[in-house]
Length: 390
Ligand SMILES: [Zn+2]
Ligand SMILES: [Zn+2]
Image 1 (tube, rainbow, N blue to C red):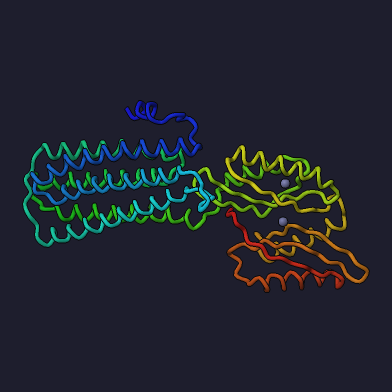
Image 2 (image 1 turned 60 degrees about the horizontal axis):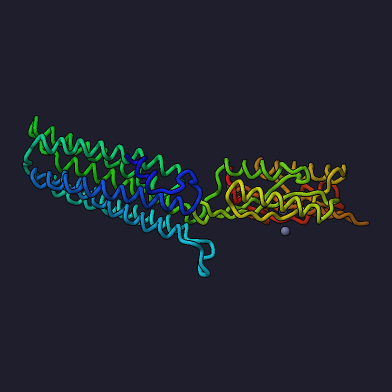
């Protein structure tokens, strides 16, 4: 049925990286979620009132707040699909993360209320009116939520949406909470145990936990995350596929929401090359990156000396010194300037985050070791931090 709805309402549905298509997916899926959640709320609420069960009523309100969360998702998708404007030239993609954060906070708040009501029930336990109809309603509710978490996870992955994935996690935790309510209801019917409050407490704790987890997942991309190893590999494969490019470093990736990536990197090119020809190669590499990875790419050229044994031997020496300080410490942009009294070794050192030394200490250590090799060597060092993580 959902496949049919998507066929009808999501035009151009294969083109999942396109902003317009993502927006249509988001709005249709969230709208469908609002419909299902309001349906579940209405039925469970009536069952909860008739059974005089606070756990059942709480479970119903859980679904109502999910409908509210989906409404926020629709707003998020609508804004994320909005074109860039003069005030926000990088688009509005990150609004989707903010919407995801609001969804998470709504989940945490609801969990808190359930925990509070459940404590009251534990202190003052009451009888509930058992009926097979309400148990059947709850069972149907579990199946609906399982179905929802399944399709939300599927489409969340397909269009790379933090909101849909967060909602999928919530739907799954809903099935566990509803199952707990069913168990407590059945145990009451069979043994007369008044577990309403305890099952509510467990439900509330699960909901708070799910909310905290999805809050963390939406805050992280807002602060800025390193790209995935898979993405770095793709960039490297494209850039180094050109014969003129000897290597790359200093990759930076800025994410302004899915489909709005801005990347920059340094490409090492032979210093003997022709600037116009090399620029042409760099332009081609940039064009391929933007076409194949759906990003805006800027490449900075670094001249390196190729095939000079003296430069190579000095570079190897400095490489070894860096690795002896920390095995993950690397150097790049290495060049030398020779003079009559001394030789300048100019390079960048990439210091891993786990190295506890200060920048000055790293520079001093390297200088000291290089100086030991030859008193004529003078180091000009720039410290660099990694913007990718692997
Ligand atoms: Zn560089
Ligand atoms: Zn250019």
